[in-house]
Amino acid sequence: MKQPSLRFSALALFAGALGACATIPQPLQGQYSPLTPRQAGSAATGESVRWGGEIIKVEPKTDATCFEILGRELDDSARPRLRRPSEGRFIACRNGFQDPEEFQRGREMTVVGRVTGTDHGKVGEFDYAYPHVAADAIYLWPKRPLVVHTPDYDPWRYGYGPYGPWGWGPYWGPYWGGPVIIRERPAPPPRPSK
Image (tube, rainbow, N blue to C red; front, side):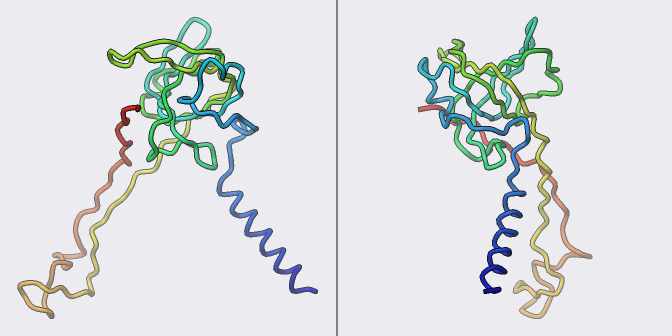
């Protein structure tokens, strides 16, 4: 009898630990329509949505700030997935002033609110219909950490090179290996919509 209850406790603990890894920030919590920006049309007016993506443009107006966002699929914590194809562009407006310097192009953002209609604009020369969201909350995600790459290096591994199988090989350097390369994780280029 004690065996199953111990197993159940361990399972509950494991599930709780997994749930803690994918916590949705408080302003973004709730139940929302599964509709994507690309699927939204005039029939979507009034739908409650949680959409996110990369900021393309920020435009402060007299009583609100509007964001043009390249929509992306959201992960379990409601953060945009950068390696996914675009789900279409949308406009999200929030009452009050939001500083464009803080909401720079390329930053990740998630918004929650209601679809209130469609804005028409241009992407290059193409006429584009943007779903318009009256945002109740906006969430600017922290920048992703830098990715550190080091060469594959093992000072104890011999290489097969011009010095034979027992000499200095391609993995040996003058001291402890090659340079450390630090790069920001690049955002993939936007893909053309079909």
